[in-house]
Image (tube, rainbow, N blue to C red; front, top):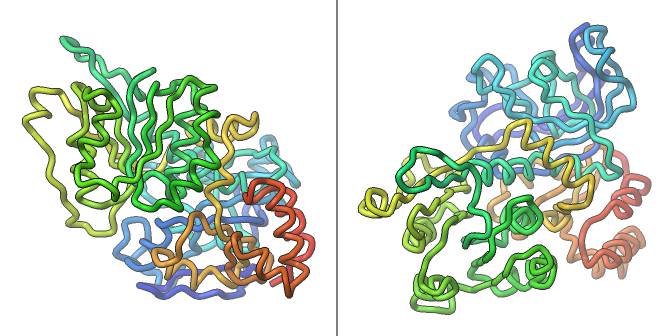
Length: 420
């Protein structure tokens, strides 16, 4: 079967190509990919090429398919897996396989599977590790977002506290405690707010910061103070650019006590150091944002590590259980990651989008792999719709959902956008 896919050949060398997939083996599954959301991790792989830990050294001659936040449908199932999967099933994939200790992952390491492709061959190790996850939702884009949401779920589970005088690590954020999400209204920050409000363990106080009023206002319109209060969370949005004393401003929200849990959502030294400064006793700082700079450093107060029992954790991705939790919570309506998406495009827009990702404002860039469409901001639909009926209809459909991407808009795009 032929496929069209974006493959990496080296540093900043991505190519959209059409090629033939090998014949499916008995332990493989043939599938079609409907949607993929582009992750900053794909940008890092693109700029690092074979220097990236997950990208093979020989991609110049054996290129691999990029993209790891994808959702699609099974077309054919090899005999080994017929008892577990069937044609027509929707699926999502946990790319962090951890197969025999290897870092190999779909979207980085494999020639025939990745999110930015029309058709793929799912290798045996994906199923062996339980990483091919059935998805029963209506919206393909939700299946794509289950991977980034799982990263958020995982980072909450990785945080911990230790009751004084014990060596017991109580995993997770402090129930009813004080929490801050710094640089917290980017796409992953929005997901972190959603999870903090709607997860089984909530903070009593959640303070979200950024330095952009427009981004803060958008976040506040989606995850409202009123919605948070219904779940027992006092939610506060703050612009730390508007003060000469961000530490004092943040500490004031806690009555001077400090924060039990702090999530740092940007690889920026002053933000990390701010997070460290506002921790309370037994506080946990989670450095969520992975830097591209292998020499990235920031200062921490090690006096407080010793005497105030401060903890530092970091996570890279979630595991399969985190992804299952994400799918369940999205399925029953507790989580809605639609707010993460700010742009939509076709497979023909992937190369340019991936290579320029840090310079494109907004949140997640959602790709529909079988479609040809320039990457387009949802906020621009209405203006484009003045001359184009396709965008006019999309504008109407997102307006019904508070300006957010949704299943009705997806169905219209899949039915009416040009095929690639």
